[in-house]
Amino acid sequence: MYTTNTGKSADTFPHRNLWKNQADLETSYTAEHPEQKSIKYQIVQGLHNMKQLYRRPLFSHLVHICCMIFFCMSMYNVIRMWFPQLSTIIEHSERGYNNVSQDLCERLDAYTAGLRETALNSTDGAVNTCSGKVSGIETYVNVIILGLVCLVPYLVSGVLVNRVGKKCLLFCAGLLTVAVVLGLRHASSKPVIVALFSTFAAISQLMIGLLQATLIELFPTSVRTLAISILMMVGRIGTLISNVAFPILLDMGCVIPFYSMAAIMCVLTALAVFLPVKKT
Image (cartoon, rainbow, N blue to C red):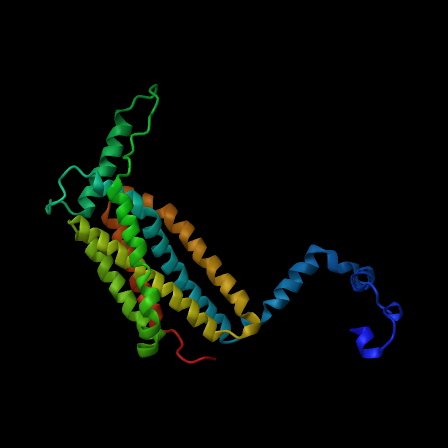
């Protein structure tokens, strides 16, 4: 390029090694500013880069959406990750496939009661062996069904968002998840249980996508990546907490985790009402 533009020989180009010159500049700059190597300086510089997030109304929007994604991802992932185990318990329930007198909570309570009885009957000197249920073909089919149903929101969300908007869609999806969770509590047929679990996971996944899209619209380009990173970090913290809390609540009684999830989704639906509509 230098030869073409100037007609001179390439040997006369003053900067033959650009990387060497860049390294020399960085070395000299670091020598002139040794304080930039300290951890304190790096922390202060990082906080300075986050300064734009703390101005109004971006910070309030970030806190608002982070609270919603915390609840939403915690509910979505606890259902998605615990569904194979719950499906295995249902598959090996004592009563038959067409039994309608034993709902989901009765089956789960019977399973946890059996685990407690096994633990009490085992002596201190005995070696405890694993007595878990082996997943059958039905569990794998149910997981495939749940995965396929979760693809539906990606196919219909674009049309629905353009027609009703993100805020209205989030509110309606929240109400629907509350109804699905309460329906799970009293579901007795295995196909109905799988359908409700799949519907809950699909709607929760849709809500996560809507919240991410809302945050992208509200935040400028300069801080958008940072805001998304904080959002997903908060969501994964919610996932961790929910997966630890779910078996504890389930051991206390089946109705407790399901009613707790319904209450959390009610809070999430209420928070959706206060989402900003216009870009700020």
